[in-house]
Amino acid sequence: MSTITLPPPAYTTTHGYADQEERPIPQEDQYVRHLINDSCFLCGASAPQPVIRYGGMRQLRQQVNRTQHLVSSIKNQTKAILDERSLEAKSWKAKYEKLEDELKKVRQEENVRKAEYQNLKKECAQLRLRNAQLSSLEGEHKKAKRILSLNDNAVQAELHDMHQQNRQLSFKLRERLVEVETLERRLLEEEDANKVWKYKYVGSL
Image 1 (cartoon, rainbow, N blue to C red):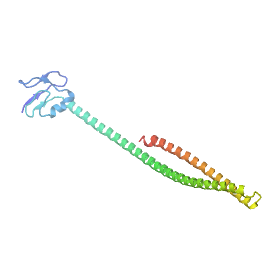
Image 2: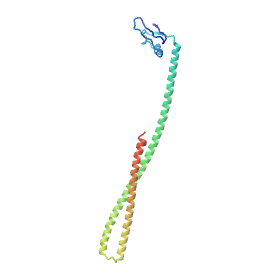
Image 3: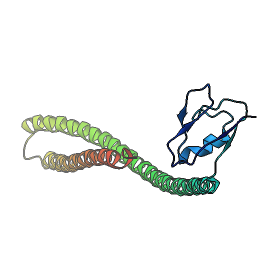
Image 4: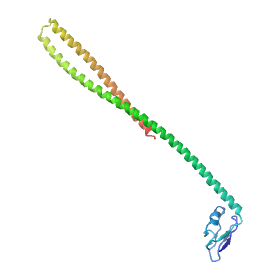
């Protein structure tokens, strides 16, 4: 077994075998690898299992202790960071699930409003058809009015009733049309609000 004696790190001299090129000795923070490695690449020793003697073992132990404390501190900091990230992830997950529930409720309300809108459209179509029928009947009554005598009380009463019904149906049709227009505006506003809500909350997650 070959033995090589190295000076302390404060020295600047180099050592090696006589037939080998001299190389710089390891610095203080390199002595751990220097002492552990079987073949030292810093000082040039290449004999099998060289024994490297270094008088500053106390400094080496201090360096090892500092390294161990540093590793322990890094592990604790890493664990704290991971725990913090885990809590943040759970918080964001809860927020995301809450937003999903709210979005489902909004979609359900939107479907209900759409169904109401479709029903109102059908009612309006039926009212328009009845209004057309009443207009046709009103035209026929106008023709009958010209034919029949205006003094016929029965005809006048019937015609008056027809006019009253026509006015009532026209008024009802106008009310329904106003309701449909109001509902259409509300649906458009809700769709715009839903789009803004999706971009503002869901898209940011």
